[in-house]
Length: 275
Image (cartoon, rainbow, N blue to C red; front, top):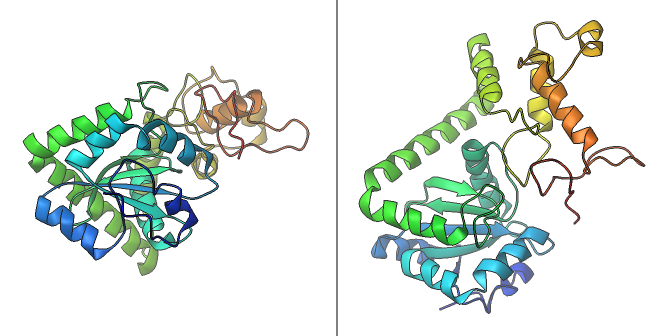
């Protein structure tokens, strides 16, 4: 039963006729997950979000996909403009898992609200180098049934990581040079040297990662910048310049006004997102 019909949120009301058994974020929904021993599928978006509406039309209005969701999950819808606190918590989790974030935000939680898997938009059939949403749902449902130990471990590890980051942000603790080196190595390991940037479509310009690598590169002087070539190596200076080149050549660059669109809908930075 869809329980969004009495919501005060315009965004949630847009989903009140979905065949998905949506709940609002409340104690009753969380208690239901615990009693029925089901994972929670948490979907966060907002009324003006284009891809939120795309995923709703493709998946949440689809009777077959909704049946999978209703059988295996407790499904909760959140308006990020109404509950920025919840959005902030689980956005950090998605970014930690995927190195990028956005909306619609799709997060899978244990009944005690620990995130163990997440992402943003998922298509109804495999594309954009992503599994289909039904494949993802069935895969997580199977893991919940047969591999609960690893799901609990993933949730515990991710929660511990987020708690550590939060405590560091408030404690005034200094980041060590060794931690900086590890962050740099991780960024270079996950960099897309074919297309530029990080992650798969939809691809977001990772401004903080680019700035971080430019600041921490060993010799970021004008001579090196002038002599830079995408084929000249895979170091911490090459990656951000390679990313900027790829973005500047693509369709997300505004050749009239300057700057970049919010993100690209493809891997090659060709098709910008229009809100």
